Length: 204
Image (cartoon, rainbow, N blue to C red; front, side, top):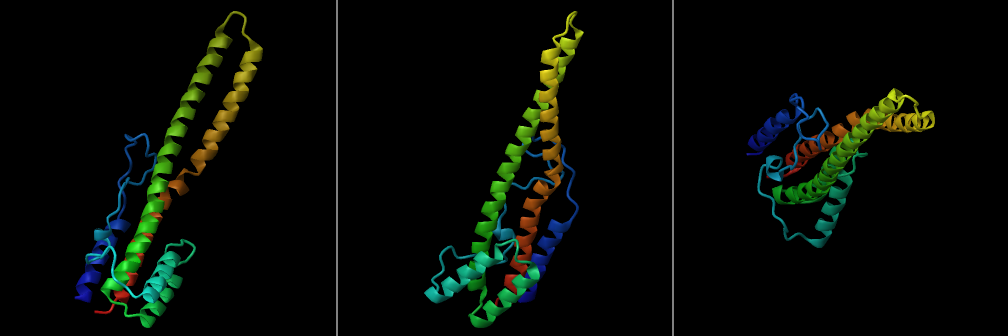
């Protein structure tokens, strides 16, 4: 039974690591090359139904909550996480019910964080689109001024300074796009890895 569950999880994880389809940029709120996955499902990561409110001993629940909070921290690498899971499993009756609870708490935290990131990426993209439009409008105004019989060079200088500032901000923000777009994917991959780890530690 345990082998079958682990195989199912491995197959799902293989799908996560497969090459993503290049974005077609038809969604103005998604500037990333990674395929947009708006909502994650715990059912695709954990091989059994998870009780929403399992009746756990208060001390066990406290230990499980502490483990879940720690596993949700990205600064905790997977090797360290494995050690924490092993220690927890050795100290508790680490069955599917308990480990499912731990994973559900990790899932809630990271999925909420990931959803906020995706929303932030949308705001980021719309802001960049608006800035790009302002840059284009400023260039048009400068061209119109320079085409006049008596150009207003003071206004041209002002617009040129404004254009330089807008372009600098736009370029700097675009440089951060790769990291910004990778973060939701990294959180998703972490969830799959933790699901495998916790499921493997559960005792039949």
